[in-house]
Image (cartoon, rainbow over all chains, first blue to last red; front, side, top):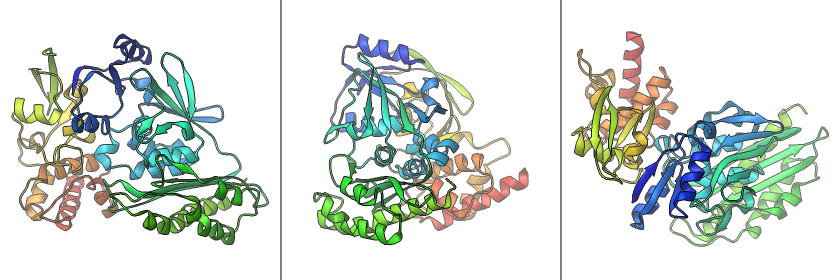
Amino acid sequence: MWNEFESPQSVQDALVILEKHGGNARVMGGGTDLLMQLKSKRQTVECLVSTGKIASMKEIRLEGEKLVIGGAACAMQVQKDPLVRQYVPMLAQACAKLGAPQIRNAATLAGNVVTAKPAADSAVALTASDAVLEILGPTPRSIPLIDAYAGLMQSAVDSTKEMVVAIEIPLPTGRYGSHFARIASRRAAALPILNAAAALCLDDDGNITKSRVVVGGVGPSPQRLYTLEDMLQGQRGTIDLIEQVCGASPDHVHPRDSIRSSAAARKGLLPGLLKKCLLSSFEMATKKEG
Amino acid sequence: MGEQYVLKVNGKEYALRTGGGQMLADVLRDELHLIGTKKGCCQGECGACTVILDGKAVNSCMIPVAKAVGADILTIEGLQTEDGLHPLQKAFIEEGAVQCGFCTPGMIMSAKALLDEEANPTSAQIQEALSGNICRCTGYVKIEKAVQKASEELRKEG
């Protein structure tokens, strides 16, 4: 599956190795998806470049108005991190649902995004967090999560040349609440039929100043349901409004039949799932002091 | 490849020389003959190959051996001491938490990783910690009970 395996200790060393192999090396986070792909496609990579020994990429820290999650932080680390739990609870919830403990101890957050599975749990929560991928490579760049998928199972990040060194999340302001939930055939080690994340910001009068509604399992990437967000934005937050928005949700998604579920079932399940996310977000936001 | 490398397993260092592309589970079984670690699905889903790598439970079928160089690796063979079986091993036997036994080493390693972090886990924590370990014959009731019993035993030992 690979000829060489490198574990550089710095970002710089990793980039040098990638450049040396001229597009025939690949960045590997935990490898839980990548190794499976190589195995099933019987592919051989010239060199796997593991991020596992780059200590600076494992940090999770506050930087100004942003929460910065290192590109080598594993899902278990993110799930348990006090800063993530405080500022982006939906991301901790999403990471807690990813695979099983053994997977979460290896799989990285960045890897979960770059593998570009349509309903990657963390990507759904990161999209609802307005997260941005910080990428180093021949041309350093930043990609908002909403643009991180280039197509079905295709990432906008070229991991033969580039590396996600960090994921940055703007800190929420005011009264904020967020929630992630999923529906799957089993509680662990099962890909979701449908997953969703919602985030709400309220002003002191209880008006919704910002809303995010993101769903996975209804398209090739996590989908922001802009129409539903607009229905919430600027309105006074009430349970009635949330129910109305959730009721309208099936009209704004276009799922397909797949091995895990029919399109009709996905549409039918969506209002209930979104209600759970939005009500929990609303409840959390209303409890918080502005 | 063919380069020499050292693997630290159960406190012992092994000098090895193998080809590229090997997973930790294969090296443990085929090179070191530590066959307590089982290979089930070989795709990171069943947990039979669970070992503890630097304190964390991982699927050894999904860890390239080169990634495990320099890490402390603990397998089921490393639990027993001169005094006998580990309290988890004893509890699995006493509670009848073993039927065919294939999933048992992985179950015990996941449980060990949990108890190392949380000496007095709740039922929900035990279920969560074992959620990546699939058993197809014993069922999970006795396994959970065994973990609870071992946790009590370990706390008594202090």
